[in-house]
Structures are given as structure tokens and as C-alpha cells.
Image 1 (cartoon, rainbow, N blue to C red):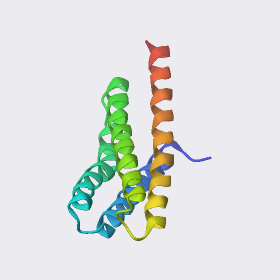
Image 2: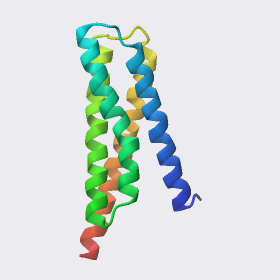
Image 3: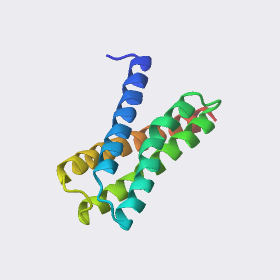
Image 4: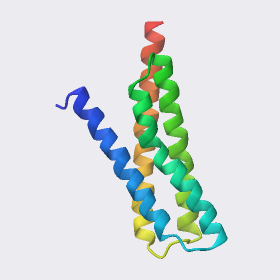
Length: 127
């Protein structure tokens, strides 16, 4: 079984890898007005979770932790929608890479939604 520190590191690494996947998809986008707009959005929302994860790990209270995790979840959901637009339009020629990125995004959404729910339940029990 993994220790808490090991799981934290794994999730941090997973978020960094996801940010790199998002950057790869962004760089594959066509150079149209629409693609440039989506590219800017996805770069911001897709890299933000990795950056905000450090904030969550340094939370000063459970309430602060839940708030930071909520920001990460919002950014992941925004990224998911951007990836769906990229795939449906399609704004990239390599749809498979974009679909893999979307799949990872959806898995991360599930992880963070579950973590927030667990943290809220613990917070209620400790109140």
C-alpha cells in the first residue's frame, strides 16, 4: 500500500503530465481565430490544476483545502469542455491525442470530486 506522501507525489506527477498533454494538444491546434481562442483557454485551465495542487497541499485548514481542491475541479471541468469542443469541431488533425487527454481529464475530475466529497464529510464529522 502506498503512503500518503507517495500518493501525493503520484497525483502531483499526474497533474504535471496532464498539463504537458494539454500543452501538446494546444500546440497541435490549427492557426484559425477559433483555435487560437480555445488554445489560450485550454492552456490556462489545463495547466492550472498542477499549479494549484501545491496551494491545496499547503492549505491552512480543511476549509482552505476544500476551497483549493474546488478550484482545481473547476479548472479541470473547463478543460474538459474545451477538449470536447476541440474534438467535435475538429480543431486538430490528431483526434486520438485529444481524446486521450480528455480521458485523463475525466479521470482527474472523478478523483478530485471524490477527494472533495471525502474532505467535506470529514469536516462535517469534525465540526
